[in-house]
Length: 113
Length: 114
Image (cartoon, rainbow over all chains, first blue to last red; front, side, top):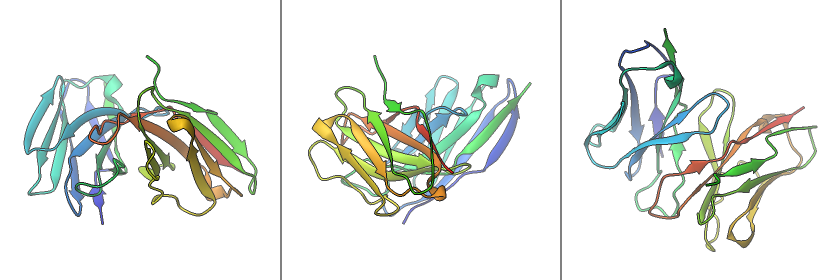
């Protein structure tokens, strides 16, 4: 089976750095996704990690450790518009026939002035 | 270019009625997914279509739920004899297909069963 854990809520200050953690347990591993979802809107793709290490993409970076079943999303120079839910997701099986994703419940980030 | 579109954006229905939700994927995307998101919950996979292959229906919660994809493009999710626990946002996503995992989501249909 699959299990994904994320903190439910986080609060951070504008201009600061925040790290959102995700731990997962899957029968195989075929990459990990981060999506951003603003209230009332559709999720949008942020990152996909399949190898260990840190991948940087502007103000957002994503880290993966396959041996620890652990990932984090790092947001730098926080802006008010970064207030959103951040969803961690994994495909449920390695080499599976489908691309369906298993999502965590998401971390609701509130950025305060 | 046009993204994934869904209709209606909101649907209020009485318990026991049937509803149909529509999804238009991005042109050229062969893979199409339906998810639902209940208040305060993560996205729950429902069904997946890939080209002409048999759909993966493993996420459908009961036999009241069914989906079709005609002509490899538009999809319709049907919920028969709706129940209050069916109230949720139903999200459709599409991707280029197997091997291309980024999924593009539509705005969703908010279903309320009274």
